[in-house]
Image (cartoon, rainbow, N blue to C red; front, side, top):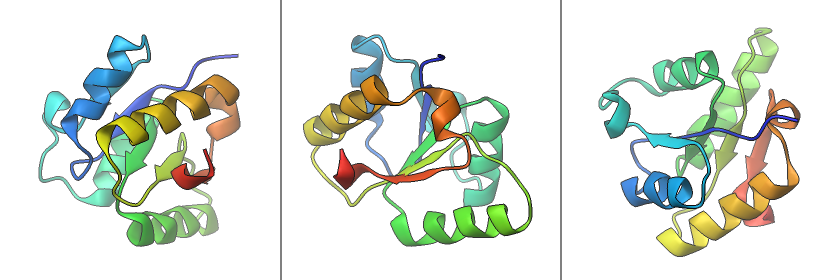
Length: 116
């Protein structure tokens, strides 16, 4: 049972990845890995190649991208979508989710952070 590793999108507060690391969760942000300005699809491809669950506030676009990838037989490490919330609330919910779900259970899944 491998722990979830997170990759936060450019539109997600950079402080979230930092806070997750403080809680001993493997997380990195788009700016930290030098991927600012890349397309959404490119970001998801990178996260998937790294085995990282993608975290974004871009709910509508990534829900569509998730469905498109599944129709095409493509795979990803998981996508977590959320409306914009406070840093503390996002971190709390991601910690809760990561304590209940492992990385294998996230493969090809789209989860709404509001459920956690």
